[in-house]
Image 1 (spheres, rainbow, N blue to C red):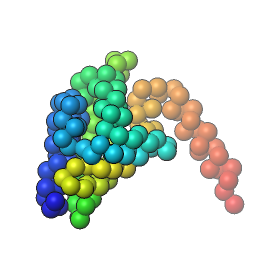
Image 2 (cartoon, helix red, strand yellow; image 1 turned 90 degrees about the vertical axis):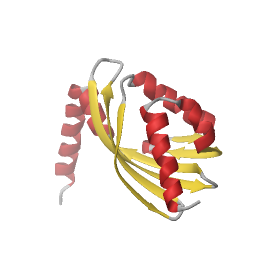
Image 3 (cartoon, one colour; image 1 turned 180 degrees about the vertical axis):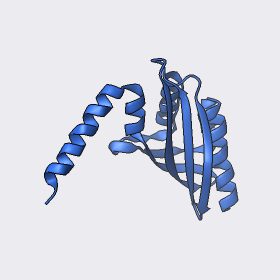
Image 4 (tube, rainbow, N blue to C red; image 1 turned 135 degrees about the vertical axis):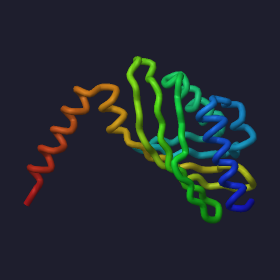
Length: 146
């Protein structure tokens, strides 16, 4: 597959699966032996695991709005910079950015590494907790200075 074809598949994943919640489309867009590598060492294997993740995402953020801000592709890899907005099921608004690096084979996404701003999400969902954590980090950084 060409770089442009890989970008088109990734665009469909972003629009049809993440934005619109058409989880069944994953069967035609993602390889059966797919692997997702998420923040903090999270790893999900197989298209069925990805379907469960997408179902959780849509249950947690029923009004999700996923925007692709930029796409860079070379060879078998597509890098997608995105913004996600939505209302968490706790009725708190969330707005954050992330990056996915996806690898393609035979016209399907076979592997993805994703990183997103977990601290921003935490600070929006639980501001008190996030402020305490931030103070702890700052204090440790001050303490560790030479």
